[in-house]
Length: 490
Image 1: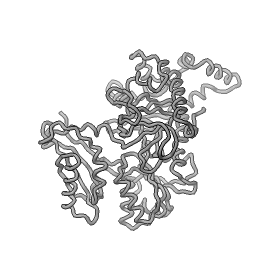
Image 2: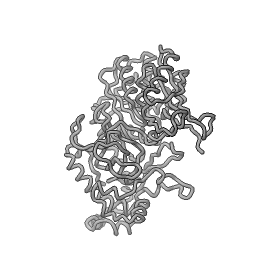
Image 3: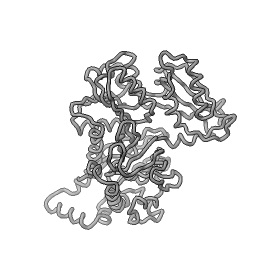
Image 4: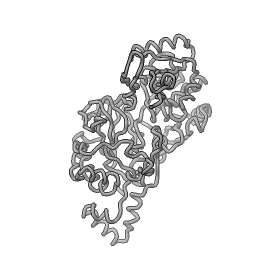
């Protein structure tokens, strides 16, 4: 059960990386995806796509984008996710695998090796994570033993990238759940020598108890969802907790804004920590993988070219964008078993697009995704207000605007309809928890003016919340809901 090691790609030129990826793409499409994936076999046949015609990254434009609705359960097909799992059988293997591979299998059988057992171990789904269900349903994504071995090694590379040392102690405050963020930390644990303590986040181990553990074990690394890490640090500040042992922080699971990063660093410095690197990780359940920033705060994420091809595309047409041009991320597996996808539209926009060549931050030439990152759904919130009829608002602006205002400790943006009537005007409501020492009335005016200056919309600002109240209301112990669209539909 061989797998392609990630580390070898980081010494290659961009041309060498792409050449290796395209070799793997051709092989994977012809010998894995088309023969063994029920969904993609039907798609290729229905669209008249010859799998042998997909030879270069550019050729992927021949394949329609796969969207979330294509894998979501439906009344007619409640287990649609199974159609994305590779499902080989003896007949398909004989028909689609190269003669050299089939000959090798026969030789193995002649010397007594159980080839059927090997194939079962390679392809049998043995582990599952699931999407968070923000669209109303949780969708399982499956791993086989091969996936676990390969992806565990990819995750362990994060240790080298961030400068973790063998003697470091890591405190994992991601919530216990079948999602990628917790599994990422756990797999780094089992394939490395770093000592870890898993608290399950604030919903399992209280924040106060977590701070006690942090001090008891002199944690050097803290990993968690950004909103909860910030909440934990803020509590440490209130309690006067010594944070001098902290060397690194890793965040994932939601957007880490520049303002939140700066506030974390301010608290850490005040409580005794020095030269802390805060690394953001970009990952999704559908990728089954996560990419770490190559430098703290760079907003630059090198893909894992041994298992994925990343495209930046027009989300409507699927057309590939030029290098460095903003667009939506689509992911194609070129290795792996279990659940695999081709041109899967993740749902995120990378403003800096996809870039090649030598990285200005780390010097390697593996393709890199460049932020800022925004959710596609937050680029298309049409507002019907008294003076703004049908205006499109990029809600992602709030992730940078509000944390950058002095005195804003926690924040949430809510879109509502006046009188809860789908035909009435929209209301933009902003809930704010003032930081200690800031006047709520003054902050209400400052926030209102800042929002109006930035997007020319008058918002209803409520500064009556405490930080704990708003944090709990947003569900921060699991995953903070910073932006909510509560407008009723027709």
